[in-house]
Image 1 (cartoon, rainbow, N blue to C red):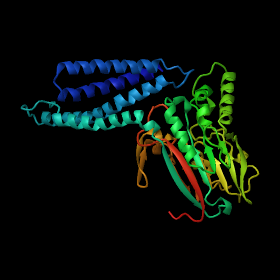
Image 2 (cartoon, rainbow, N blue to C red; image 1 turned 60 degrees about the vertical axis):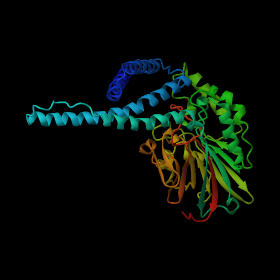
Image 3 (cartoon, rainbow, N blue to C red; image 1 turned 30 degrees about the horizontal axis):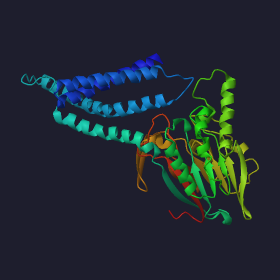
Image 4 (spheres, one colour; image 1 turned 180 degrees about the horizontal axis):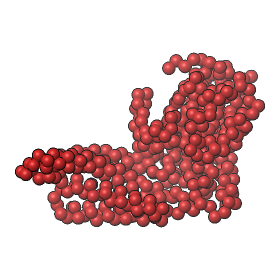
Amino acid sequence: MVIRILLLSLVLLIIELYAFQALKTLVKLKWFLVSYQIISLLVLVFIVYSFMKFDRSVGQTQQTMFTMGLLLVVYVPKLILTLLLLGEDIFRVGAGSVNYFLENDDVSFLSSRRKFVSQIGLGLAAIPFMSLIYGITVGKYNYKVIKQRIFFPDLPDAFDGFTITHISDVHSGSFDNPDKINYAIDLVNEQNSDMILFTGDIVNTDAKEMHPWIETFNRIQKHEYGKYSVLGNHDYGEYVTWPTEKDKEDNFQAIKDLYGQIGFNLMLNEHTYIEKGTDKIALIGVENWGHNFKKAGDINKASLGVDKKDFKILMSHDPSHWDYEIKNHESNFHLTLSGHTHGMQFGIEIPGYFKWSLAQYVYAQWAGLYENLGRYVYVNRGFGFHAYPGRVGIMPEITVIELKKGKNVA
């Protein structure tokens, strides 16, 4: 831990030195430069101190999220400056070396910094700076209702046009604005779907995080065909150090109870049938299964007794489960609903045309709809937020999926 803090401090110090070089090239006012150095030093000390004081027995708090937000807001723009000026330094050293070997004594070995490079760097740095500020102040509660129609040739006739509201990754311990959460619940209710499914991560770590929000989430209206949920990786309380194993187990049980307290039927490696008229579909819910996370999900146990010909909807928190086990499973799971990735809460999306996030380098399926041989997974971008207290480009999502009988026309 100490070594990591020292390495972080060294990296941040190097970034600070380069950022100051860019500023000094453009600004000559001594009082301004001294003030900048003092403020930068105070911010650096605060960030390092906060990381050193991180309490693994408590986990993420509003304080740690503030620190993470401050780290990103201050140092992502400065990192861009650093990379640009580092590139200039490589050029300056290269040019100086050429002049040295050519014995050009009229030119100094290391030329002075060019003003326009610093200007370009500051201009580029302003983009992530403003974006990250926006993400913290507006983006994290900028809820989007995304509607997705999916066609299945073997969908039972009675379910043609059946609608599902899908939410995921609430992370209630991160919330700090009751009005915004109530607004989001109103959006959920306005969809008037036939069924609502919640694919896990009700808290960050501790069941107590959800207690102030139980009444709010109980405002989610009853849906004609039910309210069902599964667990996410954060629901197991495995990212903190517990005093005893019993404390951890008691918290886990309390988290499972939370889903019932807000009116959702928690499915733990099990299934049920949703009946409409004379037709039915199988709803299957597994515990968390992640390629790089806890593997408590048991798809075979959950679907025991379900006929291969039955139309199946699977709830599985982590989309890597679909990628590694589900998409080619012999039991033919028609539609899987997941979350987990949050789209890393940072990216670029132009609906219908382009989407990019660092999440795509970790997860093959990270946001939206994906298909393999007529089997689909939909990855919800998340209702809440975690670690970074904001969202840039990848907005919090309430999904409405409409099941349609027929072939996909897309």
